[in-house]
Length: 240
Image (cartoon, rainbow, N blue to C red; front, side, top):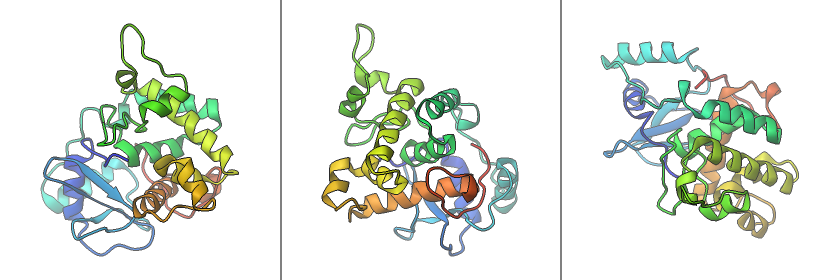
């Protein structure tokens, strides 16, 4: 998993100043490092992590959140030019969700956790694009090098990346009997790691935190009675 970056940078830096108080169960934490890379987590992993998305009292809209941050800090946040409100990924998410019977809000939550909607993201291990696909995984889902572009370059195309990543996620959900949490664990750590753990979330702290983070963002984006395929508690999050 690449730590989410860029589009949340200035917004999140201001939001962190605005929300310095201790969090509660269901909150999502974050900070922006010296390179402008945004880090999101279901737990405050160290003293840098402050509440970013609050489970119980999320603001009704991005506009209200921006206003609140501005009043609290005097800094009007500037979204990244590729901020997801009007990003090229939006239609690709809808198409992939329809093709693979996935909830688009789930894809939004996963993409936010994986790359913060940065189509150019590359992890230290070589995972690429919005859904942070490894080239070998992308090959399994039909992404190929051609005369014009390498496989790696194609993974920075939102449509290619989301189509392959969504297909992979849908296969993982089926592989693990409809368990979204196990599918997410496999997406992060590999299906072999989940199998070796006895079809449980592996004991890796990163993977456990990853599953919690995606599930919390998903829960905050959509009322639990509308979620698929598993139901989790949470508050509604403004649309990205």
